[in-house]
Length: 201
Image 1: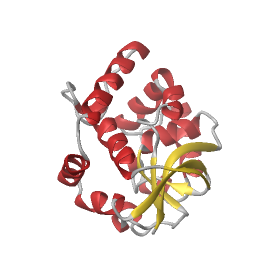
Image 2: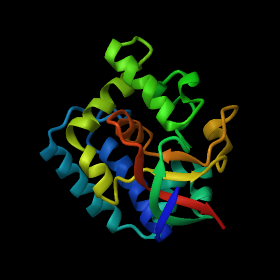
Image 3: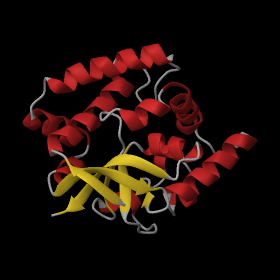
Image 4: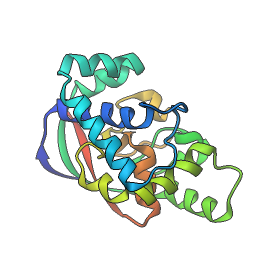
């Protein structure tokens, strides 16, 4: 885990709210994005940026807390950096995207290995969110996910939100937001990913 530069908490909150806006705004099925062209995704991203830039930190906190109060509290109790993490030192949420819980017990890299193999076999264990999300991310936004600050995965210190990985192996960090993006990047062969990284105060 390499911390490159300090960043403000409001930027991380904007990234979280922007990702929710992209997925949900104007979308009847809130669980995942419909199939979008790169141009359509870019338009949604522009709209999301315009939306979050109008919000102050208190407004962002209210939006985050409305969905899950422990996330707001966690974001306010760490110091934020932009940095790089290895896929073998962080992990995703328990059962992220409807994955079998056993597939998310270990690191992001291990989860991606299982997902990649299951995709090749068209396994019935892959729920619709994963089957739809990961190919679409790779098709439309895999470059942007690492280049645009509003799409970077958000990583908290391991165990910050206990419910995130209750009963599973503890690693250095937990991918709090951007689990599907992180898995897609790891499936594509990335061993390290750029992310927002929270560290304990």
